[in-house]
Amino acid sequence: MKTVSLKIDDSIFGETELLLKDLKKSRNRYINEAIDHYNKIKYREFTEKQLRKESELVGADSLEVLKEFDDMEHAD
Image (tube, rainbow, N blue to C red; front, top):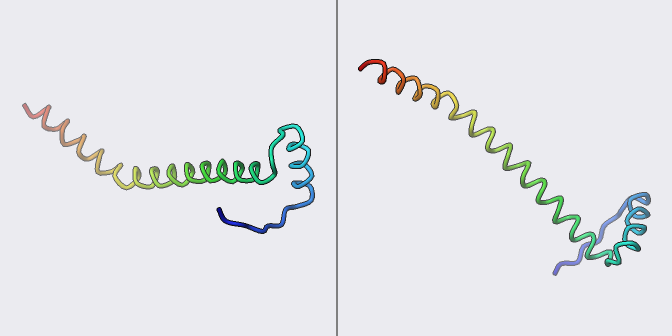
């Protein structure tokens, strides 16, 4: 496990401390879970962006292939 030092805005720290009392969870565990959750969100956003980009790249080719199949069907 790595040790990290960070500065947290006073308002965020205060909110976190209030939540921790109710959650009965250590600050360390809470911050680890928060970062893990945020990483998953960002990874999902990155993946969606990549998929959209790649879909756009093959979109025109896909339409052309569909047109060719349609032309072959109507040629018979």
